[in-house]
Amino acid sequence: MHYSYEGTVLTTNTVTNPKVVEMKLGAGILKRVVVDFPAGCNKHVKAFIMDRAVQVLPTNPEGFYSYEDYKVTADVYIPISTENNTLWLYAWNVDASWPHTISCLLDVESPDEPNIYRVLESFSGLLERFIDLLRRAF
Image (tube, rainbow, N blue to C red; front, side, top):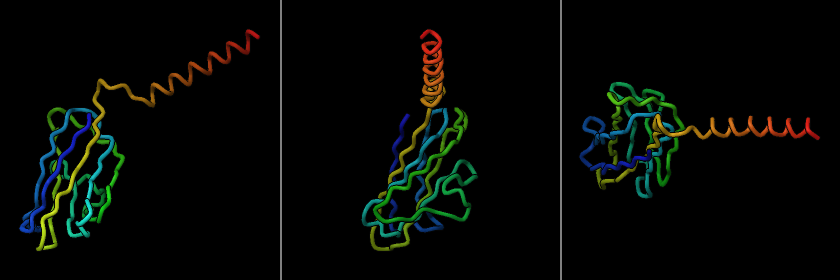
């Protein structure tokens, strides 16, 4: 499942009054997060992602993302349950002149979705056994 959220960080959104974007997800495993800082942000927008009371990205608690024309991509493994399926993007603006819009893209592997690595691993094992069988036969 693929989710996309965006938020406009106004000039009034400061570190003490951040923009908070609620991101509802389906149950499964959060596999990838992309935070897009478009051209024009000039490192004036700062952002991090929370799961309830815990900062999940960046993983250092005092850290935040802040870039210019850059997509931060994080491959993660975060279980998302049906009870606790909301993450929050906190962002603030240190440039009092302009608002900036940032996007957050999230990939969640649902419990029903086949795990491509397991499928490939199974196929690889099957192929090895087939080759073994051919070698014995000829």
